[in-house]
Image 1: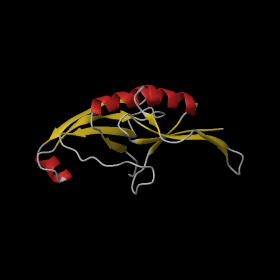
Image 2 (image 1 turned 120 degrees about the vertical axis):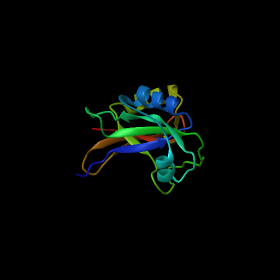
Image 3 (image 1 turned 135 degrees about the vertical axis):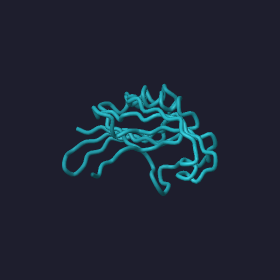
Image 4 (image 1 turned 90 degrees about the vertical axis):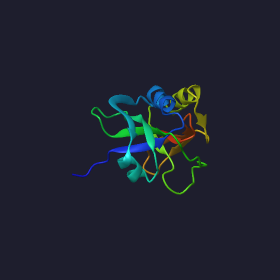
Length: 147
């Protein structure tokens, strides 16, 4: 078997960020909360005395329990600059009906806008609306719609 399972976000405040993704992006609880510690976790993470709390949220558009957005907080964490052109995973994307409406909801819930809302047409005639924004902890999110 081979399937995509989840994307993980490490949050400064997992409960606040979980609420943000539920309120803005319609992610939903599937009953998988975590409060993890122990020797096995220390070995897995390479972090002595590690402790993780958080939850798996089912992503919108899926009826069962996967794929999920896994939002965790560690007792101790590193902080780094997040930019759209950094190496590694840069952003997560959500397709929405109305980019500007969801952008406004994101802003009202503590998120921020990175670039302008852009409308473009591809060579095959498809039209798209895009914007890069950030969640309430600065993680980059792309909003997109297609017609």
